[in-house]
Length: 417
Image 1: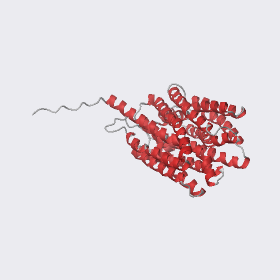
Image 2: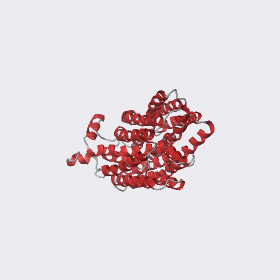
Image 3: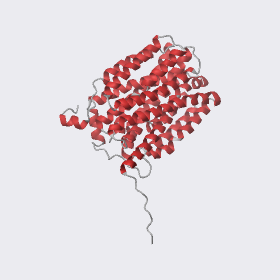
Image 4: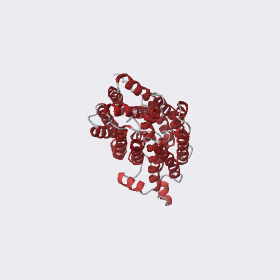
């Protein structure tokens, strides 16, 4: 009898690296699809509103509630992911997202449109975006490389924003807005097979399970820490600006008499240059103070917006604005989530990151809804642009005193608050 040769067993370090690569790649692709489709929702504002005889507030309210539901459900979705793993959470989110896009493609009236799309897509986004994805990555990447991994993941996700906008515009022009949304639902369905890989594949080796308090203790501790509240409030500003610009910029350009396709080019440039911004933020966040970087990001955002609206609005100024804003667009995400991981650890990161993200989505609600509300009443977006500038200054001040000292060290030094 001859012995059957045994299959070589990979070295644990090599297997761990393979797991990290699988999770980062799958997570980046999920974010690229999820954010890429969402990034183009502003292109549907005018065609859907005109086809149904609605003012802009109806569509804006739908997007605003969508973001609010996304944010409100995120801590609970994160809690489930922390407890049971990300695979089924992401798959469930993708299914809800698909259903929401199909409902969006065949509106039955303003109330049904607002409720169905906001609830389904809001829940779908909560299961397929960065609080869940980053928490999964934090369990397979060493802490000293986490900021870089988050930045790299967001950079790939930003390419999805860049690539999906021309696709959405082409579909609207080629097959109409309703069929375009149905096709985008099929695109989101591609997330389903990627959800399996977020556990690292068969035989995955992950970082040792992080030590830390249980869910309720972690929640009580975070709520007692000033820095946690400051992150929440600072992220409000990011959400306000991103959603206001993403949803209302196409209509704003149309009001200014600019070419119909210009908004798509500008938003695509935002996605393209966000690749650079997100990767740079993740890289710099591993070597420098993340809170200090956030201060500069918000200040520079305010300068970019002020320069855009104070100078004449032309095709050239619009394209420059897209490039500059792209550098700061979602660069806040790896830095903010990196602070959550640094201070509170990775054990409950999806839940705690989800709570901070709720602040982002409260801001998103006001950015999306207030743009439509004030436009319908004043005939202009001017007031909202100036609110966005003032909020940039506020966010810079909020992030200035944030400390990144881990809670374990704070407790040992009596500095837990």
